[in-house]
Length: 111
Image (cartoon, rainbow, N blue to C red):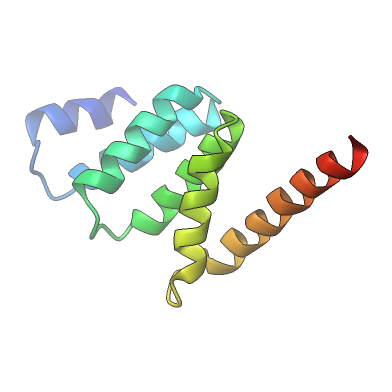
């Protein structure tokens, strides 16, 4: 992770700067340090909306929000991805929305 951070400091507008956010976010995601993962991935989506890793970052960010119990932000991202015809995560986003909806419905039925 240090190499990515060093690259970002040395080359803030470098060719691979977008990927430093994605990979650092991915490492935090894997380590379940969700606050840090969310920050890195969110920063990447704001700073590099045209990155070739944007869809990967948005999906990981939505899953991270779910882990953080922030369903509203997760649902918002999943809905955006589900509407995008060319998004490679469209099907996964639709599946997550269905699972979240079913979980909410089950909660109401049990109460």
